[in-house]
Amino acid sequence: MRSGRRTRPRAACRIRLALLAAALLSAASATARDLGDILVEKGLITPEELREAREEEHRGHAADESQLAALKAKLPAWIDMFTPFGDIRLRNEGFYQDDKTARSRFRARARIGVTVAASNELAGTVRLATGNADDPISTNQTLGDVFSRRGVNLDWAYLTLTPGETVGLTPGWLTVTAGKFGVGAYRPSELVWDDDIAPEGATETVRLVEKRTGFVRRVTLSAFQWIVDEVADGADPWIPGGQLVVETALPPWATWTFALADFYFDGIDTVARRSLDPYYDPPADTKANPHYNSQLANSNAVERDASGRIVGYRSGFNVLDVGTALDAADPFGLGIPAGIFAELAYNTEASDRNLGFYLGAGIGRARKDWYRNVLLDPGDWAVSYTCARVEQDAVLSIFSFSDINEFSSRPAQPDGARPTQKGATNLLVHIVRLDYAPLPHLQLTAKAYVENVLDRSVANVPLTQNRTLLRTQLDAMFRF
Image 1 (tube, rainbow, N blue to C red):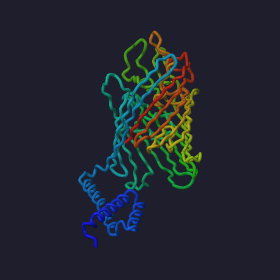
Image 2 (cartoon, rainbow, N blue to C red; image 1 turned 120 degrees about the vertical axis):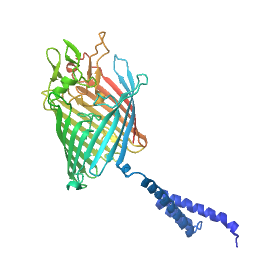
Image 3 (cartoon, rainbow, N blue to C red; image 1 turned 90 degrees about the vertical axis):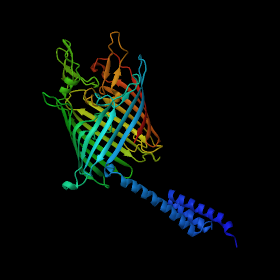
Image 4 (cartoon, helix red, strand yellow; image 1 turned 90 degrees about the horizontal axis):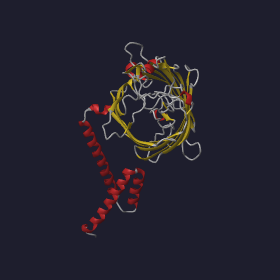
């Protein structure tokens, strides 16, 4: 018979094997159970040792959970109400055009916010963002200027009400958002609204249909009441509007989304007079206009009086907006999703130059929304192409896509004048983008914009040439 001293090492070895099996169990339970049984069958460990190892592993998990529960119990209950979110984006941007010195700039964007959910029916959200406080369509901050400090502004501040049991409604049937918030409307591109725009006022959305089967899966109807400006001695410019969104399924291979919206810009001439004209009555009076906003990028046509003062836009703005996207899970049999998207805007208040569209396609792991290519998992990638053609008065350019808002025909002249266009209309643009996610929460993007003015004669200052502008962007985005 073997002595106890000689059997202890073997027993210890068997216990270590049992612990190894238990560790494998925690990583992949089915595989670990099979391995534990195999170890027992081969006589390397006893059933009792395997049982003890598994019980020890279970006690360890229970202890960890108990410690977490004890820690959570010490925290105030209101901590559970808070959900932080945000992102940091670094961008290198280049501008290349014939007869012009190439320009390169480094930009940063930082946004941080928190949503506080008081209940299933009421929540509040606040977000801070970098950028120029006077620019409504960009939160980018151009770096330089001898390491000076950068500003942070209130970007969002709104309440979300989703009435349910308290008033006897089906939860989620109605959502009301009020304050300063993201657009919220379905947008396959930035034709009408830049992604950074933060309207002020209220939006209500009613979910008319919500199903998991059938052709029509979801139908929502939204109403918008957005205040553009507050005028002490007159009517406030505002934007009433609405949108119908229908989401459908074409099983098993695709989904299709269709949206129809109408945005009416009421009293918008007041914005042109107050915000686009730097003087009260030029050239006789050179006193500065206190409401003038030099950050607004306008490429829409304006009307002026005999003294040169802006009296309003050449046309009104009532924009009919149609957006659609067709997304397929595996259209080419390669296990790779792909899709096409389009957005069309028609300004019914303008007699000409009133049509704009974005049309594009994408392939990769972006799942949906190929224009923006938001990636979720490491190793995901996506490629997309967009063609944008926007006539001068199709949309209100002070709120449209900020990254195609400047075109210069030639270098500055001896008198300092530089024929130029600043704004996202009267342009033909081709956009190519490539996205890749190398790590969790990190997305790398390379974009190229090839831009030309549609009509040189109607630019802010008539252009003598129409040299192609190549604009490049290299982004690194960290989300949390």
